[in-house]
Image (cartoon, rainbow, N blue to C red):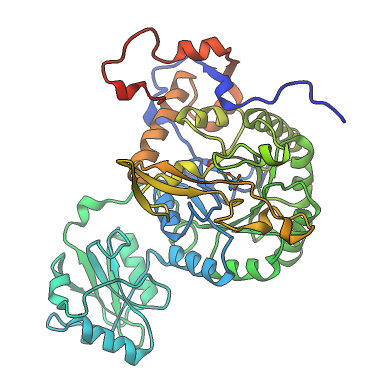
Length: 501
Ligand code: MZP
């Protein structure tokens, strides 16, 4: 065997050393904008995120609900691949359709009608009739009704009178006769109106329905929108059914794809990337991985990956290292692959962003990973804790938790992620089924975490991720200095704070 001389290290073994902080190096001046797909020197990445966070290609993490919630903050979700093509496509469509909506024929929408009337309308038209709510759930305020197969069906009492759910609306605004749905959507967009255009049978606008208190609901300036003013949505793919799955996802509007595999330095990934390039040229954006060294990066870069994902065995639910003895400490893997990315850029003039995937435990690990060279970070455990993740919230021994399971667990049954042939009866688990502490809303948590990241960047004198990658200064820490870094030699007044933060 060959040996790497350095031990492979984890994020916990590093700290950043502050740099000079000028007066204008302030949190509000820090930009976390980052490239997601490759670009040539002097050009800009066609897909950039406003925050360097993406959610993991996992059943317990990334569905359409998560995709919308994260895009609202400026990040991207990769909707999980371990499901039939049709249901993944439906999720992508729902996330992409989120901003739009229309009500079929206002003449049928009178305050004295009931939901039952609407449901009858649905039966007649053959479409699903759905209520659009302000938070995307049946509990939210109703913004309007939609007839489309693509939307989440609301669970409304059929006897509810339309006047009951019209109460949150101020009034109906009648717009210019003959306006088309797309013109109507443009009007809404231009005026930053949170409203629903209502159309007639000829798809012409008849009026808008909008919320009285819209001014209190200004959209987040970080929101990540692309063509047609829709949210940017990612999706996982695999190296098995890609010839069917990729065209279906592209057709559904997925903006960026990612080959989801526990180990990506493989001919299968090379073939999948080649197939995409032969069929779509550079129009379809696709990342590959996971790798943990220069050789893996170079292979996927040459094969045409738009970004390369790093990490084997570091995920919180992952037992690959215990089961198979393969992997590498995440910090060392990121540092080596970042060097390979920079060398490749110098040699070819093509910058291929890299994503550090898994193993982020504390918020400061995010800053370390970025300083080590990651362009963006994929996380599973972090997002699984929030209201927006697809899993159940449970009360276990008096504590609220959310379910979180690995793609390599028996529960996910995502065997193609790990498949290397052999007798199918001899499959073994590489992931666990677990709980994570419930943490509340994605919005609150992401903003707090990123405020910490920005504040650390200011300590380092850096106001952009590139700046941090180039000028950040890091030190390894000894075991005893880790103890020194926490509260020590005091008795905490609040014993709950004795838990590791
Ligand atoms: P974490 O953010 O929970 O630490 O790690 C999430 C990452 O772990 C995923 O993005 C994926 O790369 C990896 N993963 C997912 N399932 C498994 C497994 O079952 C796994 N072993 O390792």
